[in-house]
Length: 163
Image 1 (cartoon, rainbow, N blue to C red):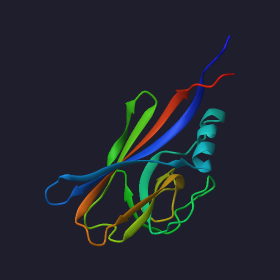
Image 2 (cartoon, rainbow, N blue to C red):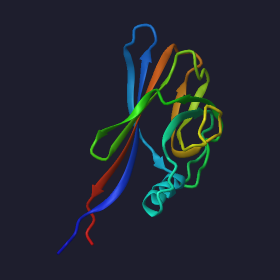
Image 3 (cartoon, rainbow, N blue to C red):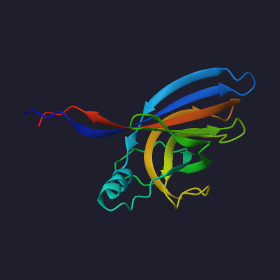
């Protein structure tokens, strides 16, 4: 008998740039992220002893173009943070959806990094919480009049693997 089941965790950011005056979507992009060691350890804790602390609460953006490593625990230069805008929802089997907004008057700098912060220590204060995923995202917001809607999907799926 051959079993073809294994679990994996995929994360992606769906980023919509929206004209602040007309509400028209200017651009939409999907960026897959790196799930960091901190997040994987928290998931293991959930199965091991139930002590996980990984509820998503904030999105941070910063100005650094540093390399991303599995062991990264903070953005290189977090400059702005926004709270989750819509309560988390289960949007599909094994999938959680979180929505964040950056208003046209916020984060008026050249954004180069973005990350999701979770846990009971995550607050509106920059640098708090557990960074669970990170992406590079290049957007010079100094001269644009646009809002940004970031929808974060975490998907826990079965994948095939011959054992």
